[in-house]
Length: 240
Image 1 (cartoon, one colour):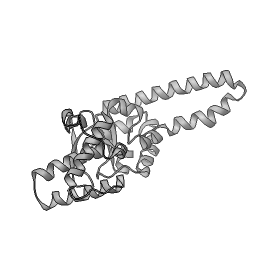
Image 2 (spheres, rainbow, N blue to C red):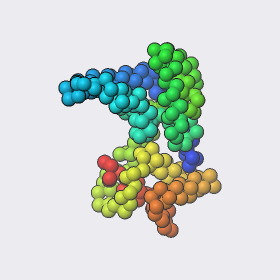
Image 3 (cartoon, one colour):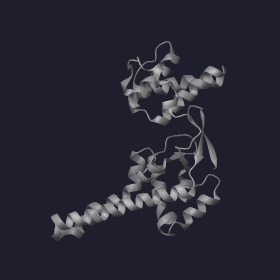
């Protein structure tokens, strides 16, 4: 399985496995199945309750949901539609930055050519032939689809032993709003900072502390290491 290394804005390098063409196809088919069921169920209910304006309601309310499904779900759910979530794959940017609305929009616009207009042929050829398994929409948006279920990275439930957090009292409850990927970066930055005392890791460590202070609107205090470790423990307790 191909993999890729992404360097985040905190100068932390994370390795991901690329989503395979089979995984991406299954994800698409699952989404398509859900949308098909949604359409016919909506049509049935509208026929029962609003028989005289079924076509109008389908056009005004149901069709936009189907058309915008992938754009809205990926934007709202951190790069995952329902199909992607089930297959444990996700859209991320190659440069390690957060995927922006315009990136999702670019991927969505080119679905017409990549998938619908060519019955998936263009998408499959592009994914197979490109270095990072990207379809045209990905290439233009600078995004890639990765498998987060088979990654070699540590998952959060393995970051700390549960017995270490048994008597821990929550200090920063707002940390639950932070995405899991960001908390993995916290852990990896802490680990590298502790193992290797150099200017690069010190800079990454301090930058991460500042970003977490801004995100949570708190002050870290004098012991910055303890601040990050407390955030990790709080997050694990709140999400386990």
